[in-house]
Image (cartoon, rainbow, N blue to C red; front, side, top):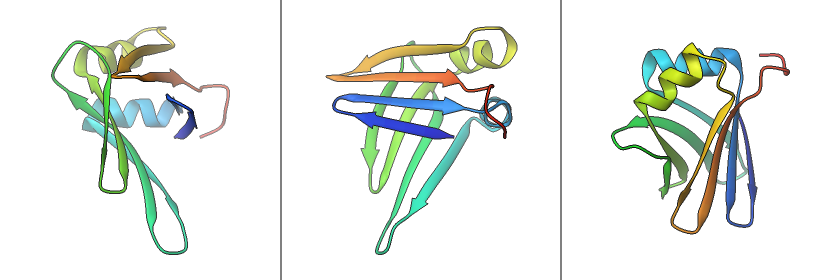
Length: 99
């Protein structure tokens, strides 16, 4: 999983394996090990009809409705966008890259 943060924008890009894991398990997480802390980023299945996000501890969590996860997994839909307050959110398939 790749994450890009720029100003008030967070973009997640998922491989085929990650989309399948999110669909099957309802959550995926990755991390970057820094010298004194670990920065985590995750996507979790959630109730609701739109994307939202929160910063919990050392983790940015993007909440994605189950219906969107199903569409991402089962169709040719490439991604979803939305806003969480002032933050623009984007989740996309990144199938051109290797797993």
